[in-house]
Image (cartoon, rainbow, N blue to C red):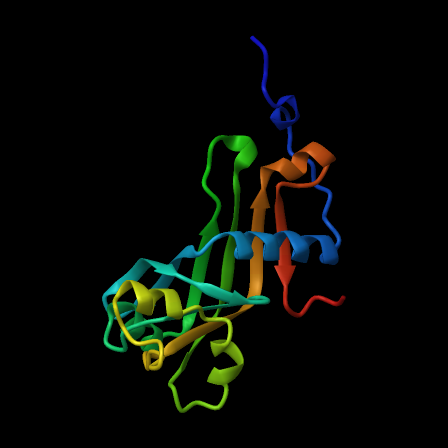
Amino acid sequence: MPVTNPWLAGPAPRKRLDRRHLEERILNLLSSQNMCVLATSGPDGPLATPVRYFHLDFALMFTAFGASPKMRNIAADPRVSIGVFAPLVGQASSRGAQVFGRARVLTPDDPDREHYWEAVRWQSDHVERSRSLDEPPADPLVVVEADRIVYTEHWLRRDGYAPRQFWRRSDPD
């Protein structure tokens, strides 16, 4: 029987991408998707919530209703994990990232909010919901600066690289 992707057979390579190329691949994934699964933990246990996200470099962000279960969990424990993935057709197309960091909740009067707010594309939401473009949302903005990322891309095997790569903010350039 013919094999579509023979480079997927056998043990996975162990070679690491250099930081610049790994960051390029991670940013490509973050830029080409807009949905993620946010994992939080709170008094009632773990919670995995699909959310639409925006990103600015390695910071992922989203707006949320302040009293939602995910926001209560973030208030109880700001450590979060975020899963971003591209649609999967087969093993060769498997591509995603697990982002780990601490969630910061920025209110409209927080001076740090403006830096991130420019990357939030709220206007299309307002148009879809017949809201005025003169009044940006006042919902809290949740920002997660990635501390570490586990990036998976099985297509890397084709060039002799490990399909799972690891990025840390604190790694030297």
